[in-house]
Structures are given as structure tokens and as C-alpha cells.
Length: 377
Image (cartoon, rainbow, N blue to C red; front, top):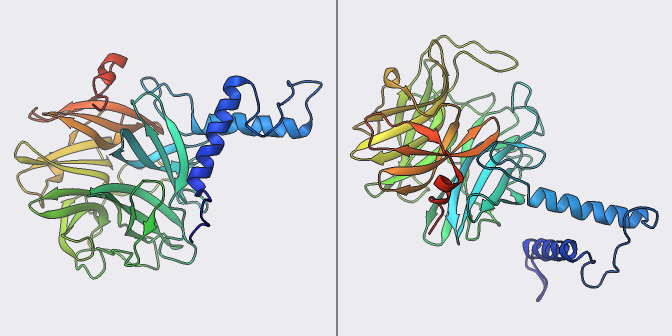
């Protein structure tokens, strides 16, 4: 919908309101054109009370107090699940599943129905923006949206994400943006990489895994790893590739878990589960795959495995990667080292890794000085 000449967009309007509210708070005066608010107490009316409280809460939501080295970042009123990061115009932008109170599952209706969006210019100071990508009733993504990943092509950012229908069948779609605030879904959605794949256990009328995309460029193609299940009943990570984001070539499973031994628990804490939240990269002549999983007799957490091939990784070679954190994303690289972001107890925290080690492992950033060194130049 086009706007009349001179009328601000929704984002511009919110920015103007935010600036006015912050200026008013700083000077103890009302925004331009409004009368000064009485001091709280006997003189304050319900109108002034509501207006003042709304401004206070608006500021708290958009500028949450954050100790990134202690607990980490989370939005007011929620916590984080799978997320991605992209650098744009001097800020690191994070898009994430915003999770409400989790009691056993994120599948409950009304949960995880949009992506949260926050950014930081310096890794310490955080601003929370309006949510994006709300679910669309009556479509393949009417139940939930999960696990965004962003890859940049020129001036355009492409978000590949998971959508769930009312039966909890999962599929993948793409949306585009030039500013990271306004997103347009592709009419060609969904991608459906598991459809007609002989190896895949996937259908649209019941719960079926096809989620958590992660993309990497290599040899003129874009490769996408994602969570799926095999027809034999094993959790797996599968691979597909493209040159135009419209035609995809299936490469089948690249990491396959156990075919049996799964035991559902209503309140979570499964002894064995999906292979999910994957991160694939090519470093020092070898492919590096990081994955989250609960593995019977090994434990729960983030795991790393390496290979000389992009399409084959051995499940029995998984090694612990980052104690206390999962859902790993790379914020930026410097030589053989990377600044990482990961989830710890619903908060986002930063870590570092040296990929030159024979079996790389990550740790949390230890000090403000260490994190400052990773600020974007």
C-alpha cells in the first residue's frame, strides 16, 4: 500500500515517537506540542498516569538494561530461541524466535508466531525493534515461524526461515528486505526441500521435520543444511543447494543419528532427540558442522564434527563444542578466530573460538576488554 506524499512510514512514525519520548524524559518536559506532565502524586490525573506509564514501558521494551557479560541479552517479557545475525550499516542485527514461558514444548498455539528483532552498535548497548514476519493464517506458515537465517546478496538481505502449518508440518520459505525492517515474502514459497525426496519422512497433514536452515556459499553455489528425518526413523541433517534460490538440488542426509532409542517426555529433557540448529562452514581446508542434540549416553548440548566432504559427516565422531551454550552463530571472523553468539538459558551471550585447533571448542567471552576488541571497525 502506498502512502500519501509526506506521510511517514510506520517505522519512521515509531522512530519519531521514540525520539520525542526520550527527549521528554531527558528534559522532564512533554514532547513538542503537548503540555508538561504534572509530577506523580496528588496532581496527576489518570490521563497523565497512563501517558507517563506508557512512555516508561516503551523505553524499557526498546532499550532493555543488558549486562551482556553476565546473563546476556533477552527481550523484556520473553526469551530467545534459534536466531541469526547480520551486520548492516554499523550495527549487528539479531533476528530470533521470541519464546514465551516454555512448559515442555514451543508447539502450543499462540507461541512463537513472529521473529523478534534487536540490534547493537557496540555489542554492549541493545535496542529492541518491532517484531517482524508474523504468521499468516490459512497458509503453510499459519502455526509458527521458527529459526531465521539471513544471507546477503548485494543490497538485498534474504531471510530463509521455517514455517509450520496447523498440523505442525514444517517447511522453509524466503523473504527479502533492503533495510531489515520491512520484509516481503516470496510468492514462490515454500521451498519444500523434502517433498518427493525418497529418503525423507515428510508430509503436510501431521508433524514432520523440515526446519532450522543454515546457508553457506561455496564453489559458485549456495548450500543449505537443515533438520529433517529419514524414512527409517532417524533424526538427520540434510543438504540442498541452489544458484538462484528458486531451483534446489537435493543432496540427501549428511549427518544421520540413531534410528531407535527416542523417548518423548512431556516436560522436555529427552534423552535423545533431533539434530537441529546446525551451523556449517568451510575452514582451513575442512568442513565444520556444529549441531544441537540430545544423544543417549552422551548428553545434551552443542556438538562439532569435521569432514573433508560437505555431504558426509560421521555421527560417531561428534565432540562437545561449547559447554553451557547452543544454537551457535558466527558474528564475525578474524583470521582463524571468530566471535560467536550462542544461547544460554534463553539469553544470548558471546563466545570465541580458534578454528586452527585440531578439535575446535568455544568458550564464553571473559571480560569487557576482550569483547571490546571484537567491536566492528
